[in-house]
Image (cartoon, rainbow, N blue to C red):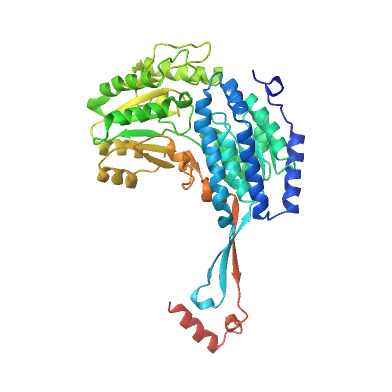
Length: 477
């Protein structure tokens, strides 16, 4: 049973926000450039927090969802979180080193360097769909970069948010990291704080509000948003493999994933084959769908009602629904993955990010047509291509814009710590993970080191004949 003491996250008020921020600012001013042993200690404390409390965190997240298999939480949240910590512990000491080189030819023997300096106090706004990983992932990068951090958890995961707040206080007793809980009003006040950097993960409409609030304080932002992430089955794809990986990417967490495949572009004559194969794949993955506890439920009644509204509106507009299981239990928000064919182009399910287990199939007559279809729409957060022809793959890579691309699989590009993760255009701005995250939360401060033998005094006024001869020489290039 979930500990009643952490069943609901306490709401914090504006006074708490102000005092928490002030404490973080003072802590940063006392130690503005933490050395590597201190940063490594923070990362190890975070690793201990995750390892020591694995079961409790899985239980809390499942309680928030109604049902979320602990295996999914461990695979999709705990595993990449621990991996990001270990990656930072292996590499961040090197990332901290100034990057030195000679100055430009005319300024020799001067030298230049880029000195990574902690940004200061970082704010992280966490969504509800992966509350562990999307809190820990950016937190790792911010701590590796030497910052103090305030984390705003989602009000839609009260059990986990309360537990995480307690654990952070226990494992970071000196307040290097603090957790803020509360509703949308608190989130708005949080976004308006004068952070040195603010990272938000969530929907595009809310991202606009966060950026607007941050702009009042000229706070730099990283926005990790969402959008319509397509999966393309190319003419040379291994078809059965493509169906399996797309269904997997759509089913984990019941499709409540910002990089889940949002719709499938496939050859027109293979639509029925996709549906038949998808049913086989789903039955193999979830043999006891209704009672096995292996499939997540929709997190809140509001989100569940939204999925049903999208489904009903699509069918009313002429689409045909193909559920991959017969069991559906609205009382516990258990909604089977449902393929949609014949969806009108202007249907809401084709305009809005689905964020659930609905999956429209969009047939194409040529791969060029499929790429043009994607190019005509806002840039997605993720793009999935299943294809064995190297020429088709290269053409797609050159002609498409997306936050990230995954070839012949889904989702797992997000777990590559040596690749930046971020959107483009409506799907986000900026990136983090690994060294890119370290740089996001650092000021790469340029330093020019002049030599005692510098000749720059030759450029001083008065601007006489000697100066003009020298200037002419410089301008020759």
